[in-house]
Length: 71
Image 1 (cartoon, rainbow, N blue to C red):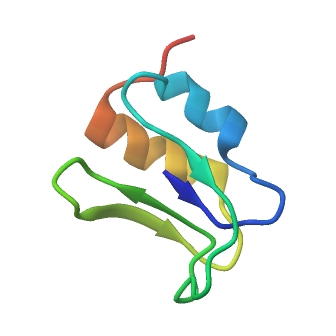
Image 2: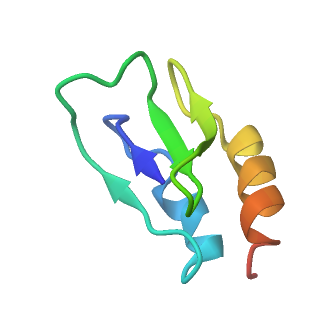
């Protein structure tokens, strides 16, 4: 999970997949119009959000590729 948003909107949400998803947040030189991206282990982008990260679609993509979140 690469979060380019200034408020790190998905940092707390991504903790449900701790150990399966690594979170990295911070500014980038060119975000290519995305505020966050979820990258699969094989390097393919599984989900991208523009212009602001949306929790529900992120959770759906994370569950699809990395299994259900831990409670």
